[in-house]
Length: 264
Image 1: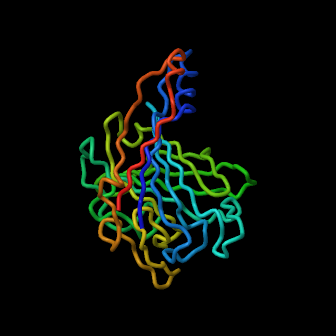
Image 2: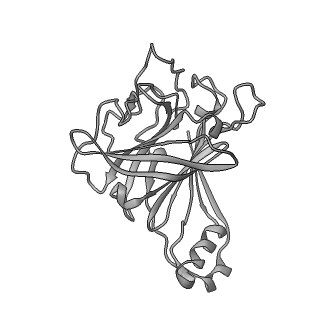
């Protein structure tokens, strides 16, 4: 199956940038879209654990991540509603490649909340989010950001105001909390899981993830070595690019540019 990454410069991003800072602003310059297959036998649970795509972008201050899942349940017709199935966890693992990290990252397959997954080549940050089961179309969820200090996980940041909608969840994470700025790069994977010692029920970087049984029968998941995983390749590396300020006068020159690069 193909994985696609799309880089987009949109008028809406430019407009939001221009309206900030009294007519001058730094906005989000592009959105990178990473696709995963849906409706495949690559996960045990239902659509709220079936990743469809992940979108990542940034401005000068924040990293924006949105996890989108299969819009229908396994029956093929019933609409997905994450807030009424709020037991799924949405995890993102970071291996920062620039700036140079002071330690090699967590190489075990144990996450801060006890789930059995990870990056054996070293995970520097873990972002775990959840939904709170409030009413759709939108609600507020939460996340915890943890950093590997060389011996254990340190809690770096918590949020209770990230948005949850019927078919996805978004995160707004300060770049500084990840030790990132313009030019920073990281490899990543996104997993769906559940609380406790569960493993990965889907993984963005892997189109052939085998079904994950509930306990007993736990199968720890390693993004770095799992068959079919593309973790550590250019297709799943993100570079922080801080856009130049855009003036309102320059908005008339802004169009919509989309460049789609497909990688097999």
